[in-house]
Amino acid sequence: MKSRAVLVDGFWIVVDNGRKHSVAIDLPESLGGTDKGPTALELAVMGLAGCVATIFKLVCNKMRIPVESLEVVVEAEKPEGASTVEKAKIVAKVKTSANEAAVKRAWNTTMETCPVGVLFKRANVELKEELEIVK
Image: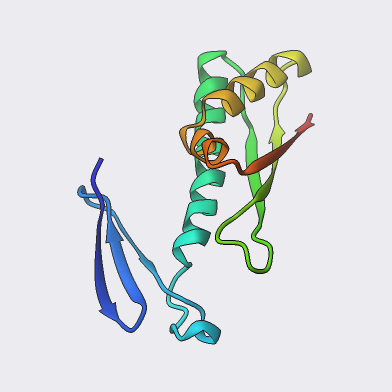
């Protein structure tokens, strides 16, 4: 994996992944930016939500668990004066006809193996997780 960041103007920066994808990051106006994209830290939290959703869907596919709909919301806390996120709550809502035990096994596997989640845990971010199964 490779990433490159190029300053466009002020704090507006375009980051790419060395393939064909890029995203703009910026600071909010209150911090001197122009708010043309999420901050890098917001992008990391977005990455956690996206990773959990992706890995959960992959695990469900492997376990032959049908997923009709899936939403993952991450709320991260960066206390005043802290250098980074210290806590995050991950809430997943999945609509499926599969039995609850199988879906919970898929969720547990996801939370153990999600690469971005592993990074957050290694950074000592306290992760709380919640799974809601809708029939």
